[in-house]
Amino acid sequence: MNRLYRTDQELECMVLDLVHRAREEYGIPEGSTGEQASQAIGLRLSYRPLPDSIDGLLSNNNEVVINSAQQNLPRPQFTIFHEIMHYLLERDGELYEYLTDVLSNDQDAFDAAIERFCQVGAAEFLLPR
Image (cartoon, rainbow, N blue to C red; front, top):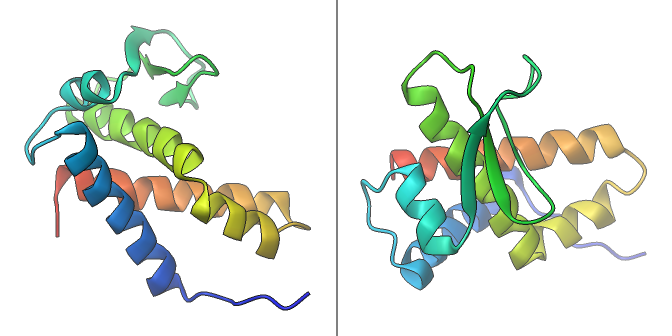
């Protein structure tokens, strides 16, 4: 198979572009809270107990669930945007397709890459470059 490999910088730029397109498409201005962004995108948001090692998750029915036990006040906002990124990455598909192709034999590396890019996107939502 002839793959066109992308650099980490190119992949990160794809994530940043996705955030900027989502802001425009859904009308999410800089400084918006995770709650406001979730509502603009059409994702339900709830807070409920989750296992200690899980800060949040995106359910199969487009609900962002945040661990109600989180004690650090800014952390839930970051977690909401992290879960929004899971939604946006899945919806967009381009990065998922690429990673599926180049990491098809390493599920752990695929999962780690997706988590990393969700962190990058969440940071961009909260503190735009």
